[in-house]
Amino acid sequence: MADVHLKRVRKSYGNVMALSEINIEIPTGTFFTLLGPSGCGKTTLLRAIAGFHTHDSGEIVVNGTDIGKLPAHRRNVGMVFQDYAIFPHVTVRENVAFGLKERKVPRAEITRRVDDILEKVQLAAYADRMPHALSGGQQQRVGLARALVVQPTLLLMDEPLSNLDAKLRVDLRRELRAVQQSMDMTTVYVTHDQEEALAMSDTVCVMYGGVIQQAAAPWEIYHSPANRFVAAFVGSNNFIPLVNGTIAGVPVPLAPGIPGNGAELALRPENLQIVTGTPPEGMVTLPATLDQVAFTGREVSVALHLENGQEVQAICAPDPALLGLPRGARTQLAFDPSRAQVFESGVTGRRLS
Ligand SMILES: Nc1ncnc2c1ncn2[C@@H]1O[C@H](COP(=O)(O)OP(=O)(O)OP(=O)(O)O)[C@@H](O)[C@H]1O
Ligand SMILES: [Mg+2]
Picture 1 (cartoon, rainbow, N blue to C red):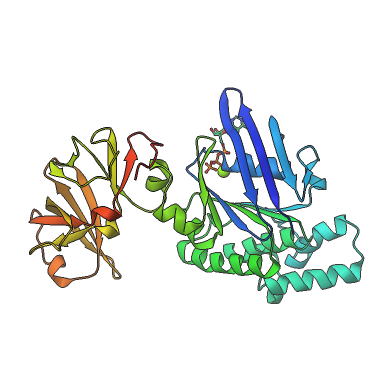
Picture 2: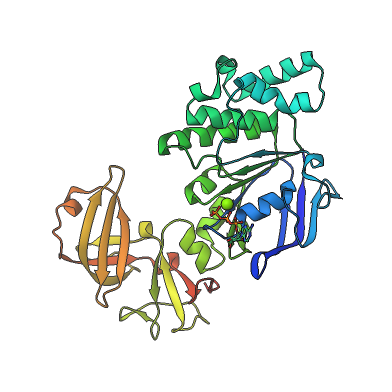
């Protein structure tokens, strides 16, 4: 059980600023996810917490004590890696028991704790198997059991599901979260999969270029992104530049103080409607041409372009009439302006609305 407080943590490699002034607070029992594109500093931050490398400055405070200078083996953190990192020549049980033997835990207690944790990760029936006779998902659960059996104060996971196929990833996502919640284990989890981050986390921390862009609950990250980067990285978004207060020549009602230029309107695909008749009251409509309609079962994904050539994606409820529209059909895109957000132009442009 641990609360974690990172204060002004910095780390650079030569002239690459991998972490710049990281400030994070993680209350006990929280599932905290670092989310961001390749190279944004996720692994660097996780390894700094684990003690696998030293940071240049700042504090890593766990339960009120700065552990930033302790060697890794004295930090009492459990770590699960992307590649399973389990010993190939010993059984599941021996893999899981390893850390307890190292700590000279009495044999009877080792047996009891290993049995308990194997039960928890649903591997009790596989205790005497060799790792090569396990699926990828089962191997990753061995990794999890091994990290948890030593009762770490903090669990760190670096893309533990990324080597698994899509279906298994979703199943294991749920299992991981269930185990974490049942143990009330403070967890720092790394992924570049935004859907995984939203589905599993109490808090999602979006990083880019070694800088935290936003740390908030999944709902807030999705619905109130702090800047253009978060709006673009989490979920899909259409960004349409404002030119003299219009988009593609159509005037948009903007809140007072929002500039008509140098900003972009962000429209989520699910907030766009394709209308053939009269558009509903209060909606802004944009003439558009249909490029492609794809039916994916639960929804219809529609690619269009506006008068100025800008490409736009819409997600609609399945509708045979929509599926019947030919490529090149002229149509109208409608959106509720109160659901549009405005961002300053630029990769990490601020939210203005
Ligand atoms: N040992 C190193 N020496 C020099 N530069 C490094 C080293 N490790 C990481 N970097 C650089 O630091 C930055 C952050 O790397 P990091 O591994 O933390 O990214 P990441 O977010 O985990 O990416 P990924 O999603 O690809 O795993 C990158 O620019 C990377 O090239
Ligand atoms: Mg990484």
